[in-house]
Length: 287
Picture 1: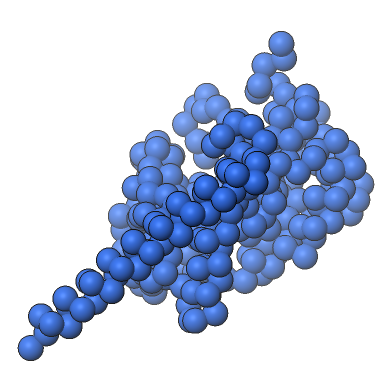
Picture 2: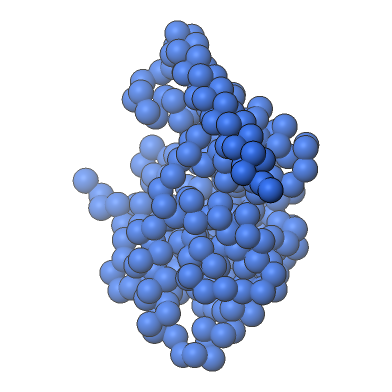
């Protein structure tokens, strides 16, 4: 049995070769592509994470599918941010292809170009990988920790403990430059000028391991405008067949879909009724 670390290092090199041949720029972020000092020593990883220009995302999936990386979950199925698609190679394991990075508030295309401009190389399995420089890498790790309490405790604490005050202040400025104040606040418990309170609350809810309808209220509050809220309701009521299959650990049947849909409709109705009662009670309490 080939160790997971060895397979992932080969995956990093193989993916770089395949995408470079197709003319696709792809940054390796996090995991075994991280530069020394970004993580605690001997930290392990379970997959490869790539960031591509959002316009290149569809072609990236096509190229990798042709190279033996079939799709597991599409962008619309991966998370509430719809930021990444997951693919799996039978020998080399999983890769998450990101078309944006949650927590970054500037346009995803602009964010990619900034990160690409700050790239350096890291050798993995005999292949130079394009990765972002150490300071940008640290920022991405902190923003990622805004959505995961365990990473917040481990990764953010490590970075805060090992960088100088000047380097930490530089990270704060980078967060502002990428309009990532809300994720920064949720990950570090530090305030940053310009953070949107509702976005911060959403990240804090995710950092508390809330999922599904537990997050719905925060997502509703953070949604910008009627159109965004309409899409939220559509996505919440829709069946995520990929996630349902993973929960059931088998193929999804029509009966599974109907049962899930009925349960979700009841949950949303309960949430809506509670929201109405809370609004009415608040209005009655006003002088």
